[in-house]
Each structure stands twice: as C-alpha cells, then as structure tokens.
Length: 75
Image (cartoon, rainbow, N blue to C red; front, side, top):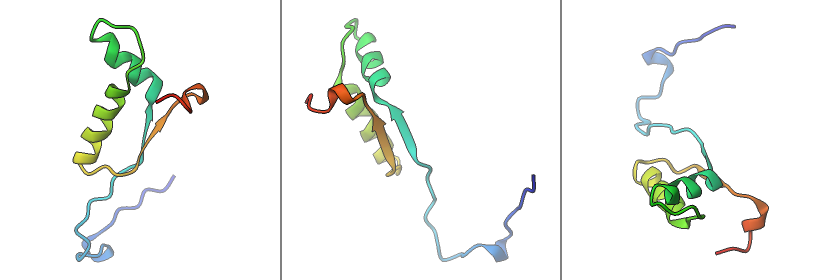
C-alpha cells in the first residue's frame, strides 16, 4: 500500500478547522454500563445524554448512537 504525506504546499492554510471523525456509539451497552456503575442493572438514557454532550462540547459533531429497534418508541 502507498502512504502519501501532505506537505505545507499541499494544504490550504486558510482552513483552520480541525477535521473530526465520525463516532458511532453502542447505545445499549453504554446505557446499561452507566447504570451498572450506579448499582442498578437497567437501561439509562442519562448515560447516552452525558456521552453525547461530552463529545459535542469537544467539537465532535458527527456522533451517531446505535440502538435496538425495540427502543424506537421508548422515551
């Protein structure tokens, strides 16, 4: 495989934004893990909310949470 490196002449110096990756979160595992740390073995939307807020405040805007279809209407 070929690895290419960018030089200063290859990049646009006017673009100061830092590109971020796309984050895909296993929502069911996160929600149960969050509540399990609180000695409660149930699903917690709060755990997902904390994770999303953390990533958004650190500039990560492309965040997706994967949840099972059975939670589609569960709020």
